[in-house]
Image (tube, rainbow, N blue to C red; front, side):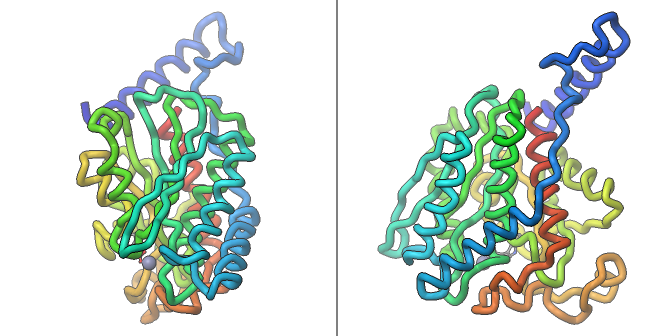
Length: 316
Ligand code: TRP
Ligand code: ZN
């Protein structure tokens, strides 16, 4: 069965269960079957920014980048892993080789949930060698990390199993994520209900783009933005240009968010989102100026909350 169908089916079942509970004699009794109780938390953007400050420091201490095969990459991975280990995650480092250098993916499983239904959220943790990669992709990496930490703080125990991932060597051509997908057995691949990708979600002149892929995932993000009263557009700056592509090729339902790279923001887009027309969404894309100054806090805040919203909604 297609994932989007089962998500809709379980949502319908949840509504039916909630109706029974509230109309029956046991209404008011809080229980595990009271499925409407688990609301996604607001993700503190200050925490997300604190992770970006740490990633910036790591780059600065390691020749100005966090690129595949360079010491700043492994230091970034160790930073994220330590936070997850302290929060109760089961972490795994997956090693691979690309361009003659060792690369690493970090996988973090939240204990519990139905491991036959795995909801994954991921982001690439490597930068290009020309800069520290704070928007690309410290932003997605920090938002996914803070969402994982929020799961732990909330003691969230969803019906489905949660897995978070930080990919290596995306900038060399989606190498880490492809390695992960290629090394999954077909059985384990089939257990992944959906993969959510976050690559560049705090662009300084932001657009609000939603991947046009799995309908249920796409709707979840659009619902979140509708609740904010913020317009979204479909992501068109290169489908297949990030780590969701290997999952999609393997038949896993995918989705994600994006605030734009080198493409130019139009006057029509400025009318809905503000910012500067005729200028790139990210003027520092793949450059040395992709520092902590290269982040729009409003975009980072909204998208961090959207990550948590989707993780909660799609796993309950
Ligand atoms: N993945 C690209 C990078 O890391 C950025 C990018 C371009 C992108 N187009 C995209 C990311 C569309 C997500 C969706 O440089
Ligand atoms: Zn990039």
